[in-house]
Length: 441
Ligand code: 4AD
Ligand code: MG
Image (cartoon, rainbow, N blue to C red; front, side, top):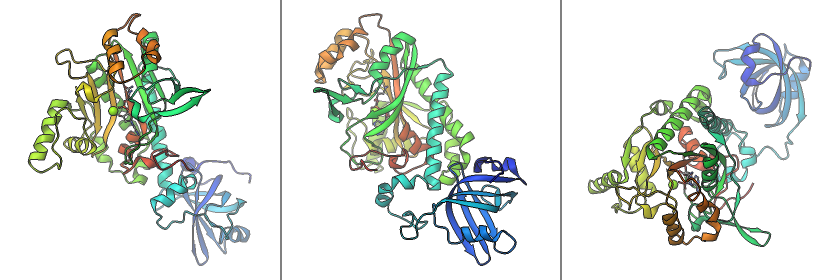
């Protein structure tokens, strides 16, 4: 085929011209003397038209009866058509079948409905569906937007290790690794390491996979997930809340600008996302606890919330449903939070921390805090949390050599993808999800 190769997403630039597309047969509708093959190439979907009589007969014969997901290189003339989903159709004039899917073993994911377990078992093929491809494009956009936001504001990307000698977020969700006969763990968060690089570079962030041996089966938990973690020297809790709201509104706006058609394919109500603009509501944990207790009193919440507990999923869902923007809940009781959080000088039983809860019941998407400055208190907390002081010697050094107030947060990519795309479960937010009962494919 001699015509220029293009992608379906760029096809509008070639109206009236003959082009070549390299892709797969997504679907085929046959209507007597007309074939309507739908082709996909990873960038989009386009419908072709192949008439039996006027067109080349060998093209008609090659496409007639062609099996779903057979790989094809097609040539055709681009024609604008208002009724077509992408605005264009292809009058197919040539086709080369690269690999024909056998009739004896057809592509397992047919356009009919399949159960989630079946689809998860075929995740390596499921990602080809239009909706899943759109979700992955939104995911890529979210990651790019977060990185652009931080890069443009003077942050330096510093990559923490994935193999680590100690816990960061509690010992109950550690994945052990045998490291040449030494005990190591997959990282739960890059935070402790980027606290070190923040003291070297001022404003830093990490972006990478993190691991939690979560034994719970919920729609919000993966065992392997990706986090963007900014860490800032000389930042206080208010600075962190400003940064979090700036980051989230930037990411949402970027997706609305650049991924509108994907959000449409996914079926997202974008009017909800259009409301996500700074400033976000900020409430204290005390205020949140009061809201939850009142909700219980007038029957809106089943369980009575006890001050001093961490917020459960139904609690987060309730609070976030009271606002149409992400809500920032700050100053939780220190005892339900991680060992490294700075106490509130006004009330040392509280931590200078913040959780950002996404609207529409999506729950926590960001967690962060100011970090503990005092060497002695940090040693005490390490012991209280049953952590080995030996493994934290280097971390404690940071409080000996030019310690400054500082802090940061982690934004879970999959939680943000689930919220922005309006998905019920995080399993569709990452190409190959890892969960309690899923390690295949
Ligand atoms: O609140 P977390 O546990 O905070 C930290 O790890 C801090 N060290 C981050 C920091 O301050 N640099 O996790 C941060 C975010 C959560 O808000 C959530 O979005 C996501 O990571 N997250 C998970 N996402 C999917 N599956 C899980 N099991 C998750 N656990 C946390
Ligand atoms: Mg958290």
